[in-house]
Figure 1: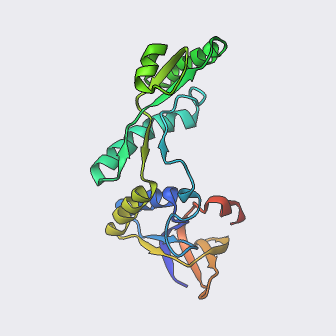
Figure 2: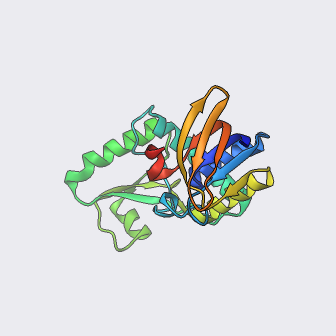
Length: 209
């Protein structure tokens, strides 16, 4: 039975990002993907927004990772030529009754280290004439990106560092043995493979493994 150092199950954005890091660290990395190409499941079905991190509970892992990850993502996209735009986002109070909610967003954002700019109704109108609001907040660090371009860049980095992507290869089972983890694959040519480390990034199928 063939043995590799580490295996990533699932070639979506999370799987490709971790595979890239492992490969850059010099680890023998194999990526197993059930589909014909990378990034066609969960990672292809999203809004492609780079979130600022202003809504998440202060001190939570999600808040910390979003704020830090946003900065790293903008830098990576710029370095690798991934299409992206830092377009910002408007949060508005359409009427006076919504002002307390707007204030709570501002407090949460400040606690999370996310910059927000208060806006008057006139300032909102100059940014977007179609919006009617009594007040608002502007999140300058919110943006958008090309998710396919991001995955293509991650895969390119991983492969240049020695990682291998194998498609049409669903992982249908696994068992832990004293000398590693044995994976069982399906598809037209099923096989077993032993690895020392495993990342389950199979998206909606992750709990089946």
